[in-house]
Every structure is written in structure tokens, then in C-alpha cells.
Amino acid sequence: MLNPRSPGEPYLIERDAGYFEYQLPVSLKAVIGWKGRLPLLRNERDEWELPGGKLEPGEEPAACLAREIREELAWDAAVGEPFHTWVYRVFPDRHVFVVTFLATYDGDATPAYSDEHKELVLVTPGEAATLDLPEGYRTAIRRAVERGHFRRG
Image (cartoon, rainbow, N blue to C red):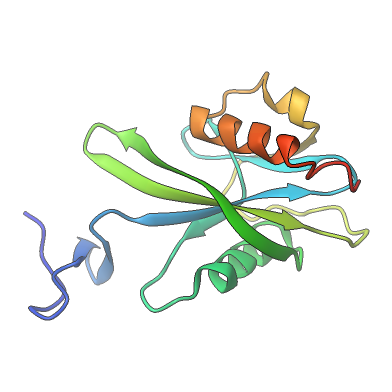
């Protein structure tokens, strides 16, 4: 049974003790262009994913994504516009609404990944197509290429 946080906030449910989230969590992800490459992170399900994370209640999406990129890659990236959305069925009883943004990093620091991931790779968009990556992320990367997002590198 799902427990709402309060009668006035029925859209927030308790997932774990004291942890509330939207009934359909919103995940913000970034296709980050850096020197013609993009960072991908391996998660606990051994899938590759774009950097980013869940939108917290009251948080502004671009600010959330910038925070997540800092936490996951130690980069201060410029978050651009959202350009691709999809619903990801993580497990049969767990779905996430994913909003993908274009982002860039113009610094020289190699990314460092946090302990919430197993591994990080920097790949070209073409190389990303060969990895175990959910289809929604593949589509987002392809659309970023079509927009010329990697020509800046």
C-alpha cells in the first residue's frame, strides 16, 4: 500500500521510511557534449545511463540536473534545454518519467564518478550504440547528434 505524505499532497508517496517521491518519479538526465564525447555511467543493474537523477519536490529541473552532474561527475556543466522525454519501465512495478536535457562542459577536468555508480566511460555517440543502454537513452543521444550537439567538441 502506498502512503501519501499528507492529505494535501496525495501526489507524494512514501517509498522508504521517511522518503517521499512523486507517484511517477521524474528523472532528469543530460546528454553532455565534451570534446566530442559523452559520459555514461554504469548503474547497479549493469546498464549504462546518462548522468542525472530524480527531481526532488520543490526543485527547479535545470538546477536539479546541474546539482546531479556535480555530484556524479564533479563537473559544473551548463544545462541547456530539455529535448527528449520518455517513460522508462525499470521493473514491472516501477516506472520513471525521464526528461533529457542537452548540456555541455567546457572545462579540462576529466570526470570523476561517485560511489552511486560502478563505472564511467567517455564515448562517442557511435560507440554508445554498442553498449547495454536503455532505448530511450539511445534515442536521446541520436537526437542530440541530429541537433549538432557534438560538433562543438
